[in-house]
Length: 303
Image 1 (cartoon, rainbow, N blue to C red):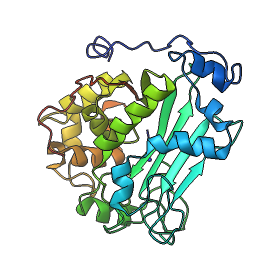
Image 2 (image 1 turned 90 degrees about the vertical axis):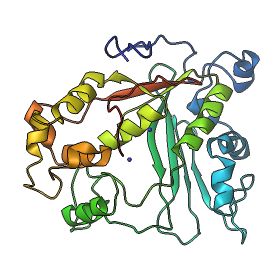
Image 3 (image 1 turned 180 degrees about the horizontal axis):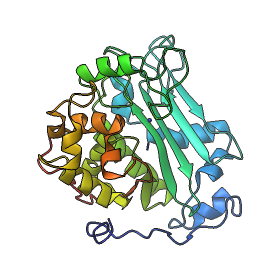
């Protein structure tokens, strides 16, 4: 799934490519000492070292209560109407990663919400994974190929038949179901969580072109990849190199796809970036807490 600028890339938001360390090494201070200076960031690793109930109390802030109550889940206890646990917390001691996932029913095969946060090398926070799937919508097996091997959101392998069905249903690459349309709510909640921990920003690597566009709308800027996004927009215009790849040679390269975010995303997922000697990799985005960078690499876009 994470993967929601410099003067060209930093003209909207000033961000250091290698931010200075502003907190002590993991484990160097106790929670009490960290709480003594409210401006000093607290790491995920530090929280993971706490007793389970303390971890649950803190990580409870990561899930919007309105999202849980929408599925009749108690936001305090994480229990469903029948008293069954529906929120799964993975935050093992001595690790720097936390993963929270939520099911709408105990026997549901998939989670409808999943967020993963991780410490990075500069005492900051990364968002490696965010899933928001509507469990009431049709499911497409884009996550496994015909031999039952995981596709890793289509980055390692592909299930072309299921991808075509998903595309025709209006989904973007990497999606198994329609979205919950709750990303704005989630990022507002994430801002609150980051402030509680004393962090100023969050970083991620967008999985697809469509997810990068969504993250732009949620206030992110590019640490790496702004020029690529502008090149993509330019070359998808009529007469451009990417526009010429939309020749109906595959179901994912239809002539009108350049007009929409999803259409472009499917073409990129199908490998059209080779026409401009580029790949969808090495992009990195960042959002400062409480700020919107105002980046827009696809003006007047239709999703």
